[in-house]
Length: 238
Ligand code: NAP
Image 1 (cartoon, protein in one colour):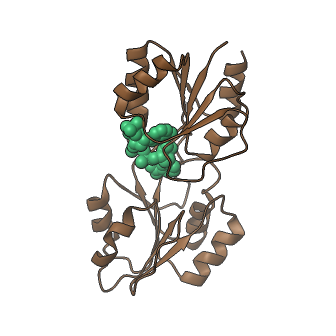
Image 2 (image 1 turned 45 degrees about the vertical axis):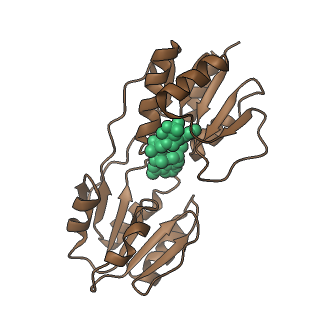
Image 3 (image 1 turned 30 degrees about the vertical axis):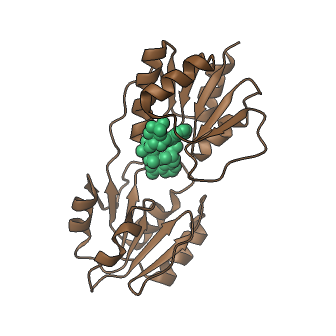
């Protein structure tokens, strides 16, 4: 029987993990919630780079690694491919298709934080939805801006920022109410893809707001790539 190591940290990875039996292992970095209701084994924390991951794969008798991490978690994806090569096991990946701009969208693509801040300069009330990075820059907010930063875990507000602790999925009605209440004039986002956090883009479109979009990192080639949980499960069962 194939013993799977599933690298997770996303809602899709958890859906996959729920389908795995006790022989398999679900691995989390340890930043978010650790599920305690799975049939498969759960391990938490880094492996110690690609070499550590290769050692883990060999010592645990893993036959297949599935990378179902977030599209912006580029380090673990690179480590997975290198480790699989070293341990001579296949590497599959679940790669959610990126969102595509639609008619009426005004996306401003940026490559890093520095470029992002430059593009943000003309705006006053951004909504940040790209994780914790803005929290490290709250003391750099220019006087004409007030930031709303949506992150998973709570964090104190400052005079120039409001930190919203919230976990998706987010509904269209909920996002409409939030945008109306806090009068955002721009949205800052990763291109995560998937449905759980897409409603903000629809509301930005409705309100004619620009979206500053952080480009996806390049990810390494894998042996097999899947766009959906269902396709990956079908391949596993085959
Ligand atoms: P990253 O930069 O690619 O990885 C940093 C290090 O964290 C890795 O080198 C590895 O440590 C450890 N790691 C990451 N995922 C792991 C996993 N599933 N199991 C065991 N160790 C793991 O990742 P990140 O961007 O910090 O994201 C961390 C986790 O949060 C990922 O699992 C990702 O799926 C999830 N996540 C990330 C984002 C995002 O926007 N980046 C969004 C939602 C969820 P070692 O080198 O020591 O093995």
